[in-house]
Amino acid sequence: MKVLQINTTVNFSSIGRIAEDIGKVLMKNGHQSYIAFGRGNRPSASELIRIGNKVDVYLHVLQTRLFDNHGLASVSATKKLIQEIEKINPDVIGLHNLTGYYINIEILFDYLNARQIPVLWTLFDCWAITGHCTYFDVIGCEKWKIQCNHCPNLNDYPLTWCDNSKRNFRIKKELFTKNKNLHLLVNSNWLEAYVKQSFLKDIPVHVTPSAIDIEVFKCQESNILNEYGLNGKKVLLGCASDWVERKGLKDLVQLSQIVGNEYRVVVIGVTKKQQANLPESVTGIQRTENINQLAAWYSSAFAFVNPTYQDNFPTTNLEALSCGTPVVTYNTGGSPEAIDQHTGRVVEKGDVQGLASAIDDLSLVDRNVLRQNCRDRAEKLYDKNKQFMEYLNIFQFLAEKAR
Image 1 (cartoon, rainbow, N blue to C red):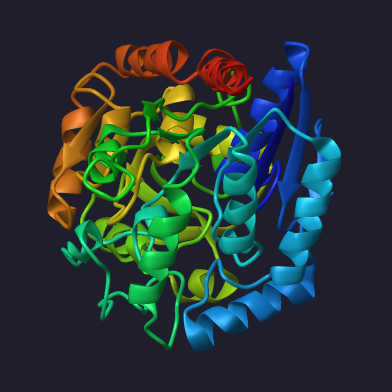
Image 2 (cartoon, helix red, strand yellow; image 1 turned 180 degrees about the horizontal axis):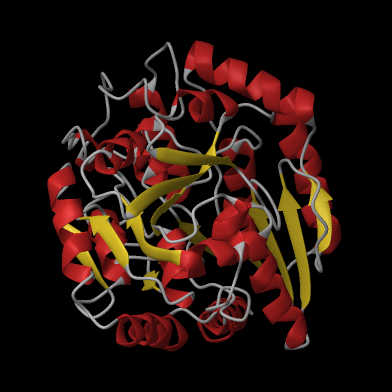
C-alpha cells in the first residue's frame, strides 16, 4: 500500500512529528510512505515532496491579508503537487494541517473528488468547518453551524483585513462533502462534538487521541535546572511552539507573581521580544526543536501548566505526562481529556488563582506516586507505537473499500 500524507511541515512541530511517525509505522509494516509538505527542511524517513517555495508562502500570506484567501492561493504549487500525486498513484491520502499558507484547497479537493481517492483527514482545529477562523469558542460564535458571514474573528489566525467568510464557508462546504471515500479523524471528544454539528456531520469520524514517543519523552535525571540557576526551585513549566495570545502567556506571568518563592515559572518557545519583556519572576527560553532538552525540562518540572484559551488536544500535555509530570490546565477544548484526577487538575478558564490553588493541591500528593501515575497514563493511552497503528488500520480499510 502506498500512502501520501500532506502537512504544513514534516518532522518539525508536533503535527510534523506526527506525520513523520505515521510514516515510520507504515514502513515498518511493509508499506510505502510519502510526505508532501509546505515548508521547513528537516530530514525524514519517508520520501519527501516539497510543495512550492518561500515566495509561494509569502504570496499566500499576502493573499490572506488582502482578500481572506487562506487556502485559496498557491495555485501553481498545488498544480505541481497534483502532478506528483499522479506519478505516485497512492492508495490512500492522509491530510493533516491544510492551513499554513502553502496549498490551494479548491485545486486539491477538485482533484481528490474527481478521482474519489480515499482520504483520511486529521482535524487539529476547527478551520475545516468555518469560513475563516481556526477556533471560535472564546468569542462564542455559532454562525459556522449554518452559514459564516460578517466574521467577528478576523484578527485571529489566519489574520486578514478583508471578510470573505461567507464565500469561504460555501467553498469549503461544497468541496469537503463530495468525496464519498473521505473519513475524518479527531483527537478529542470536544472536537468530534463540533464536527457533528457542522456540514461535515455525515462524514465518518474516528476519535483517536494524539500520541508521542514515550521512549524519548520519559522520566530522566538532568542538570538543566543547575544550568539555568534554578536548583532548589519547583519549576512550573509552560511550553508552546508559538506564544500567541490564546496560549495564555499573560496568565503564566500573573501566576509567577502569585505563587511562593519556592516556585519558578519557566516558559519555552518565546520570541526574543517576548523574552525581553518577561518580568524577573519568569525564565523565558526561545523555541527549541531539541527533543531531549524538552524532555529534560518536562522531567525536571514540578508541574506543567497549560493556561490555553483555545485548543484541541495539546500534545504538550502528553509529553509532560510521559515524563512523569502532572498537568494543570484550563477547562479548554479537549485539553482536560488528557488527564484524570490522578495525573493533574482542571481549572476554569481565566482563573489564575485557581491555577495556584491546583498547584498547592498537587504538592500534597506523594511525588513518587504522582509521577508514576502520569507515566502509566502516557504508556497506556499515548504511546505512538500503539496509537498510530489506528492510522494504519484506517488506511487499510479505506484502500480495500475503494478497490
